[in-house]
Image 1 (cartoon, rainbow over the protein chains, first blue to last red):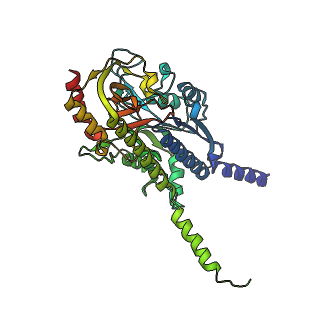
Image 2 (cartoon, rainbow over the protein chains, first blue to last red; image 1 turned 90 degrees about the horizontal axis):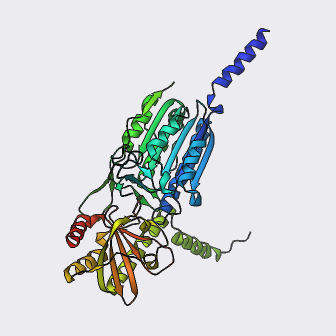
Image 3 (cartoon, chains in turn blue, yellow; image 1 turned 30 degrees about the vertical axis):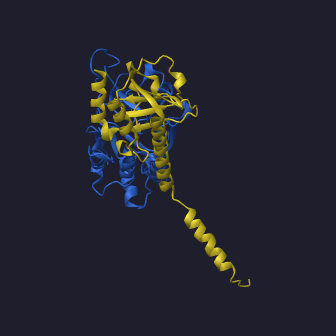
Length: 264
Length: 172
């Protein structure tokens, strides 16, 4: 009897030591890949995200649920539908990543005549009447009840009238990535430029996205409880866009202090 | 296997060819980006040097459809009436928009819709062409009769304050 009980307890202990098996990493990747000027760059962003998500899933044992919205599927309807239909369990992680044109309306769509309430951009997709706002998407995803929600847009934030790096090191870096996705609860909201600033793309991807994934792939060597703070502090740094003129062109990401709790 | 020295130079030649022809993906991307920028610049320089008459017009309200791909001059049957530019203003636009130093080159583009509020109407032996101007995105888009669907956008951030000041003065 005692032997059976011990075996049962051992099995339970083994199950609880790898809790990630029943958890899911939901990723929604939105890329305006058919666009003329930045289509190739948004597709490259999406590829970088897919590669990173696969890495995180492998390291954390989270099962990956990857939703791709690109090409002809790039519509506001499809974006809103994928967010609305996403179902998450309490220990899941959600990552939403938008790569495409963005803007800020002259007045708030829900309160005409007053300035836009959100500091975060709206997505330039069609139909025009249902263009989503990044902050609203973040709130909707947070309401799903997942443990960690990361909402990112690599897009412009201007008021309008309407390299990937290989994972070189292993072991300790893998431990940090595991901690980033398994030991945090809360939400992170990021957009690649402040209001009235442009976000710049090369055909090889967004300048912000290249920098951001470099940080995510090689987290700093600090206490695990400070990992996201350190990554976001680096991600907030101004990006100097290479320009032939005298006037410096700056892109400064908008990243509020996240609502995060470290769980050991 | 019998050693045949004739293979050595052949293998070396193949290796040398492969090394010479191989370009890592990052260099290919940079090359494509530069080619994209060059295509825009070549097309704009050709359009400006061909223009015999240059007029300026303003979109009120700003042109939303100007963001679309596959635009040709036929898509603008009801353009606002264009005011002919005087020699000094025409020279300013021809000089600045033909100069590579006026642009963000290397394939850099903005993640912002192209909503035009001004335009230049170029008329020459090659027909009508439009240079749509967006003061919101600080960029210029060339529209021709070509239906190839290629989007030719140049970002004029390096000269934008001077450019906007000139636009404002002309449209006053």
